[in-house]
Image (cartoon, rainbow, N blue to C red; front, side):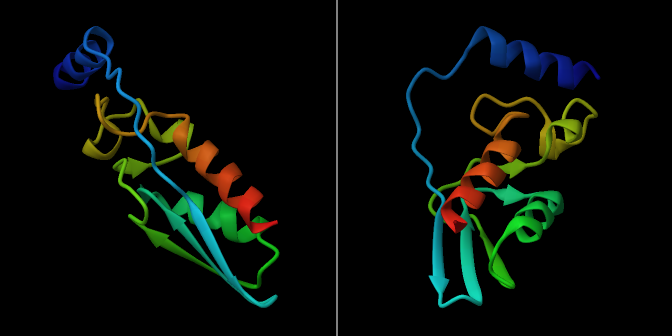
Length: 109
């Protein structure tokens, strides 16, 4: 808990101010197959959510494509400890997982 608290304070006191650009892309083949590239190491729940709403019967996710923001989960995965979701100045926060799902679904339309 002490480490988690120290990391959270470091993030608050030394925010990153430069802008990073990470991209998501979708490549579709006909009406059956689509590849979704995520610039992260997504928790399995992201893939499940994307596949569930995709109009392509075969939707394949590619991790660490077009950038890298570390591990990405859903909001309820954060704040419980563990190295994947520890506060970090350079990695994704609790809002990124939902944003990646929505972005992928927009691109899959």
